[in-house]
Amino acid sequence: MSDALIEMFHQLTEGVPFIELGSLLNYEQPGKYIVGDTNYDDSFKTPVLTAGQTFVLGKTNESSGIYHCSEESPVIIFDDFTTSFHWVTFDFKVKSSALKILTPKEENIALFRYIFHAMKNIKYSPVDHTRQWIAKYSMFKIPLPPLEAQREIVRILDSFTLLTAELTAELTAELTARKQQFSAYRDKLILENGAKMVAVKDFAISVFRGSGIRRDQVVPNGIPCVRYGEIYTTYNTWFKNCVSHTTMEQVPSKKWFSKGDILFAITGESIEDIAKSTAYIGDEKCLAGGDLVVLKHEQNPRYLAHAFLTSDCVRQKGEGKVKSKVVHSSVPAIERLEIPLPSLEKQKEIADKLDSFEELTNSLSSGLPAEIDGRKKQYEYYRNVLLSFPELKE
Image 1 (cartoon, helix red, strand yellow):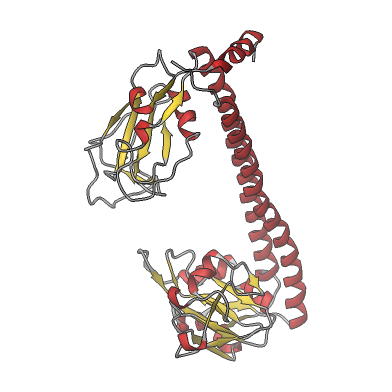
Image 2 (cartoon, rainbow, N blue to C red):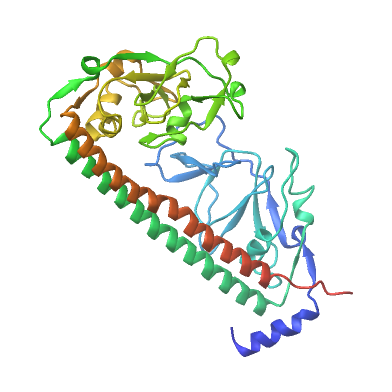
């Protein structure tokens, strides 16, 4: 920051005008919706934006009703219900009527990019599911220093945004490479160890389905249990403690699993993820929820957990499955899976090596959000400092 700008910011401590967003921005209620079109594919060119948490829903090949944007002519997409908003510099179509398209009224008064950063500094969350732009958000006031000061604020805050984006890309690429390396190492140790391929039905003591445990049957404390969705969202290759609990009264038909058992989720959203599994190595007896299959055995559970995640086993799990919104597997399908089954001593040796490698991979994975979060907080701190002008008294 130059000496002249430092002096300008010093002078602005006496106050700057505060202007309503509605006076600075035009808004458009889009009317060119893609109604009922679900034919989205990444091979298509034009992204489809929707409200809520999705933002980019997919890509379409429809050529009409496209909103044209670029780096030189950006827009702000504002979600009228959640008040989340995004800086958009690419052509798009819209899916939801909850979106508004914001554009600047006069760039010679307020820089569009400055307005965007100032909007981010507004602390507000809607309390009801109603339209927010006209009723509330457009009436929020933001400080409006001279254009030269706005440019300097934008330069500083954009530099933090760029650093965060670069860091995210760098760490994400590193994590992806580490996961690919781990997957290749796991395949090599398990699929190339010379052991005979054995079907699950030939070494299983029993294979059975769990019994439904609804969300409203989960309690803070009680009998530990696992619901099938947690296999995808919560548990890694193996786990010791359940995150959910229920009561004896809630589950009339109880299906128990215990230390060493393997759990398979037989309902999923993709062929690639179907029948994802994990090993339970805790000490308590637990209840298996519906859409889970339990495998009881006398093998090394940590080895089996890794073996069921090899590329060959994932391929077997997806055989014959049809891509749709929900993909299902079954007890017979699990029993048909074949994996290499070396001696128990060799199983433990392989599992120990893979656990060590996976721990290194997971340490990077857990550190990634923390590092990015630190950069975001740094940006938020400077944004708050740079935009903390007193209001000029009339």
